[in-house]
Image 1 (tube, one colour):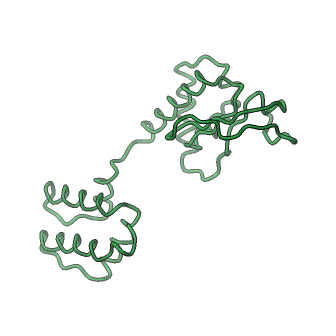
Image 2: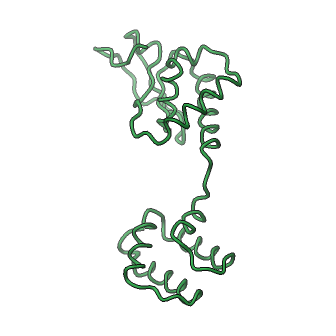
Image 3: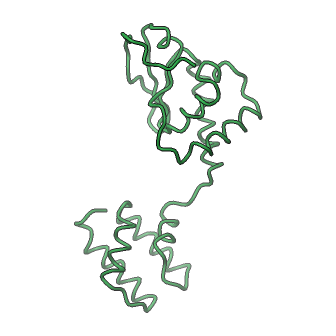
Length: 185
């Protein structure tokens, strides 16, 4: 949502005010707008409509957000990341360098010994538990590696970096490094 949507957003807030018989001030409108502007207006309208059908009380911004974007637990998110990791290991092995859209996976891989060690290990329950614990630890950290270097890149050969995640797997970089930019663990 952007500034051109403000008049329409004001109408949505007016519907809430009328429905719940609550007076809204400019200040309240501004607070709701600032919190909700990250979402498309149509999603906000849909969430407000759902709230009106299911609640007797005027919604807090967090309640509208919860209807727009149902919360996933960190364990669910970590399990999805684990599945991406397993697919990458199966498809690419440790030769290719990889770049996950979810950069937290990079930190988990490095904490578990690096791409070659993680790729070479048979996935088991303990490895999964370690991954989930690392994921939980690194989830809120803003600093993650940009990519994970494979064997070919670490050893100065022609390499590929495969992007893994929401986009389809595609080769992003083909090349040879003049200087080894990968950390050797």
